[in-house]
Image: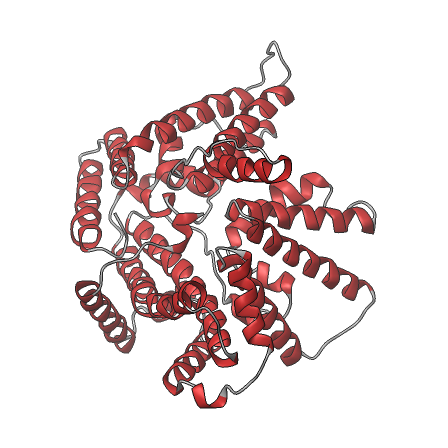
Length: 462
């Protein structure tokens, strides 16, 4: 069930909303929580019910481990061993489904063996709910969690707006919200703001992202060769497709959650305005950046050791981030490039060097655009094809598509000139012009859904 589908917008979402608040109005608090968990699991099972037992077992296992870690009791083994056991179990589960065939392929290549592939289908959202639960276990070990009941934990993990592709939420952000009495009553301000944010996210996905998806697919997957113009259109199309697809999903998640008085963290803050790679990662997929910082980079030592150790920590963090996104060497290389960029920036700062802001933005944006090529490419040859075309400006003037150039320029202006969706809506939701404008975006999006088949979100694959 996709956010950008009629069944979600006009059936699942309103039915879940009214039943949830009806149960709360009758003071059936536990029943309302239980219903929300049931609705979220139904939403998850819509794709493939076969994987429902996986998330259920994972949820129960991590809750029991987390509760045990948070208690001041003596066990047969130390809490540290208990934590390592819990984290390892999560990594094994993720690794089995996501990386088993990748590992087998590489073993076959290195030693010339013929081990058959498992051809496992990737359970939906496994990367996201695994990271959330690892964070919960670590925080329980540190004594930073409270004694939450299982229904609150289940809502934290399965809450349908953020279940499939984030944001990657923290237990301290979510669990207290489900426990607060004021969140059990309909809040009409939150409803209005939530619908507006959802509508903008829907427009981002079905109008902007899906348009660029067609151009990106032509260049990456269909064309055998690309001239200079087509190569740049291809790379920029994916750069904008990925942003509007994922930020559109996040907006819809934030908007849908707000209907239930749950505030999800902002995941994007105008990332293409960044003037450095560090600035970019403070703006792009902010909840993933937070996880990588708090649970990988800092535990590795962060910047508390020598410069050499700091550089290694940065490289390890970003390579792990690359691997998390996908089982392929192109993802590893993408993470490696970002790690190298972070190391270079740190050296640059230590030398006390400065750069003009416009030049810094230009270099950062183009670095991001070029590295997305590896992120998108299915094979190395696809990446080389695009990059080769981008670097060789031979006889491209006659082939320029003015419409594509115009659309790319307009979209670039939009991402640079405007505030992020959440800030924009909170500032302007009472403005009549804003109301009319967003309503128009929603209507256009619905018409497009009628004419075109709803497409999945890119991060469903990660």
